[in-house]
Length: 574
Image (cartoon, rainbow, N blue to C red; front, side, top):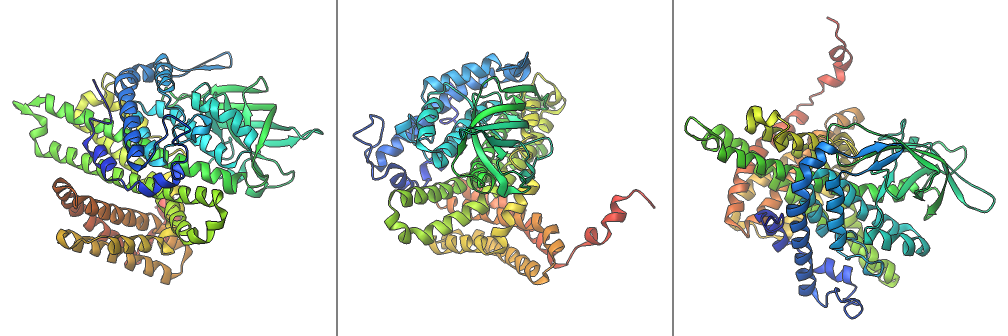
């Protein structure tokens, strides 16, 4: 009996030590629904017990149903014929199991049929299902992303109609943002939305690279303001499948074969406006993308966990020179690197998820009790700033980490890892999309750097220092303080230099330095509860501290030869 929650000691460690109390209070509104719904908790302990049961069920489905079908799903893939998309049989089995277990409305309020779980629990579910099959997560995970956006911004009529359908699992969904000429630059979206004399909205145009674009409903970003050319002319619409939209093709992809990626042609397709006009991109899509990005952070983590476990098992079974290859230091070190990188990504993911849940909880509380807005103003501002910095950080770190771990997984397998008969090559292919979709790593750097240079990073570090006693964890704490010093000096140097190109050139280094410093603090906090985490922290610091120091020296030495000579470097002329 395989259970991807119960068999993961590090995931269990995080669940045990998550500070969920305040989030539960916000989420449950003082447990007002305890008498209304049989599955609603009556207190914090009851809520945590409920969360654990939900995660155990999710872990069981992931381990016993989704993962055993994953290789066949990858081989068969989603199919496209005569304008119709069909899932692989294994994908249908997994979705049916999740639907029967009432897990499709993970974060949706109970009044619409959801479980009302916080984002942190959703990320754990995403991690487990992604470990089982990364492609499956793209369909399952979209349910909550789309449902949350509808819940936050749509009117009650739309919410009452579509949220129960999503929670029941009777429909699947997509977010239709990208176009042939509008990828990362969503301000360039040109799909047209117009109204007829009755006020009904219609959509005309093409969307491309749409994950699960064959779903029964889509949230569509469209240009609603005639003559506009920027993001202020874009609105968001809900479209329900009919014959006014044709799937023109599904993409033949490197990985995640079970998830159909569609090109959609809208031909005067009727749609409903979500929220207000003109804020589709600047408010609604940003909210949707942030949830999707933390979801990709969890997906990346799941892929990495699967790749590591495959490599570890192979290293124990494969013998060379009369001993398992795991015994060779070169292989053992690779496995240790993989393991520590995964635990680092997990620490960052659940720290980010807790902060996002706090931000969302305060926001929901203020909506219910506007008279208390003043009391929560500073807290909301703090958590919003942290979420805006950490969300792109975790997406960047975990997706790059997943690619590194999956690559090392193939290396440990040797030649067999290059063969289709082994799962290692599938994890490698599936990982490759994670640092591309929902914003490339380069875009995540742009999104995160502002929080670093404007003081959000240092505020977080100061909070770690103020709220924790690290005296018993020397010399680890002293080494981490050195990392902070390197980051702070680099930030100040870049700001004082006041050169936009120099700032942009070193943004990646600053984000990576800051990310590893935050992870070091998270390991330090974990080491207060675990002797093993002290060993993990020691190993992490042996490499992270020199890397941060090196990047700081690169910045402080005003390294900029690329900026000065990029034309001659890139041109193949001597």
